[in-house]
Image 1 (cartoon, rainbow, N blue to C red):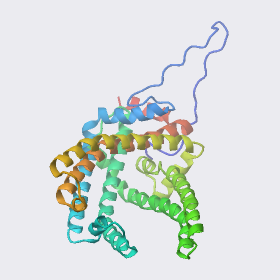
Image 2 (image 1 turned 90 degrees about the horizontal axis):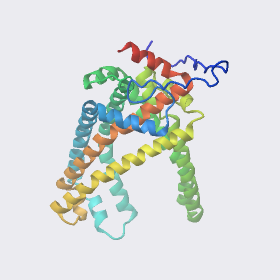
Image 3 (image 1 turned 90 degrees about the vertical axis):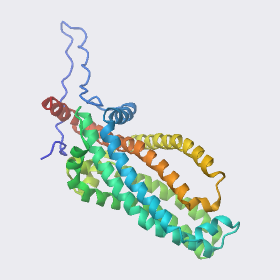
Image 4 (image 1 turned 120 degrees about the vertical axis):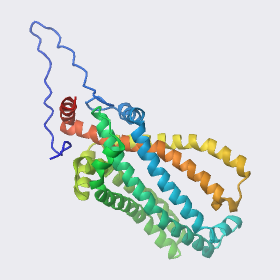
Length: 343
């Protein structure tokens, strides 16, 4: 049995006093706050603040994990991209020509897909390790306890196989939903009905995007469930769907807000990188896209951005999981007890 078990104890909150000799009930005492969040249902601002506070208080561990993962994955991506496109010409020719034939476009796509086949597994492994370890850091921060990199690794290494399953299954479901929406339009265009095909493609794209968003939010709490409750892949996905039920729009809004924050952070980091690139390389050309200087500068930019944003996205998702359990299962009572026992 683990501390994050899937059961709840009911609300069990005592009510205020009666009228009697005291005309007004005593004020409700503030919720305990042993760590980065108060142990009660959270507002949007408190979830975001909890993620940033975790990064600020435990920056050595959080940034150590995210920076190590970002350096390894981005270095691998930069090397693979540089070596792969060194002797490939289709993408370079695509950038030089004003008009592109279907055959040239197909050749360029083949080159790009070959590089992605090498890059995606490296990125996937990095994302799995970072998400799992950062979830443990956040869960300890809620209790006011520090977690070293060694502690986070010891708590998550047994769950990496399950996390791998999640990171394979959920993106496939999301991509499949989007592809199903686009399929009728593509078939019509292939059959020669271009006008009807384009219309079906646009409508299907919107429908597919909506379906993909539904699946994304439905299973967005599966990763913290798997790590903290030691669940299997299927059980974690079912558990996530149960926790999200009835709160889809709220969770969707918070996740989108977190993505916007990450996007802004990436844009802020990108501005000085673009200035440096312009100073060192001048005006970009088609050949510069896969040159080593460009790849190295872009890799440094991506490393810095990932190191700063991974703790935020992982923190928001982990705190959303805890908030839903506090609302549904009175997890705050268990957390308060665990925090008191740890003092």
